[in-house]
Image (cartoon, rainbow, N blue to C red):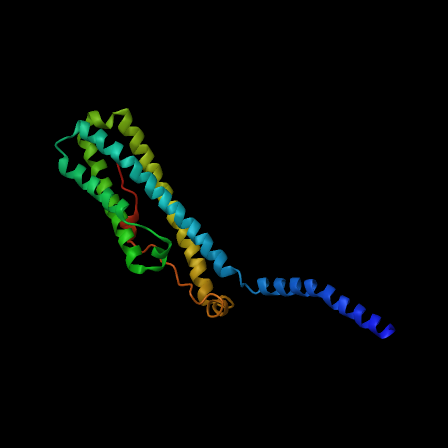
Length: 207
């Protein structure tokens, strides 16, 4: 009877130590960076959402800008149509989480946004030919909002690029490469912006 009691006590002691052992093991594993890949990936996705948010904000402002310019410069039909068409192409591209791992799809998205930036730059440059338009309060407000949006886009892209750099580096360096080849074998590198700097620069407008 005494031996049975001793065995039961030992069994209970072993069971009591299991949660502690599990906690210690969990801490050791987390300290090895096992959570870095999904954490960095989610951070990059969040930064990408902000990029999309700022691009959408710009797209929402464009129709009002086009209509304002059209009221003063209807003869600039070609420029106005170029902006409208570029906006339509940019907003027509369906961006999904898979886009970030698809070089071709990401390239198409970049090119569409770059074309829209170029068309916007030409439209704003046209405004210099029309003194009445340049002094219109609605146009000035829209121009200021677009300028602010371009700056926000630049910041959002910068933050996304840094987040992707950190995630991609984790996939290729120790100890992340170990987890990438075992627990996260399906995770791929994410795409980043590669458009030339002069294309990504916000349109310069002088009044």
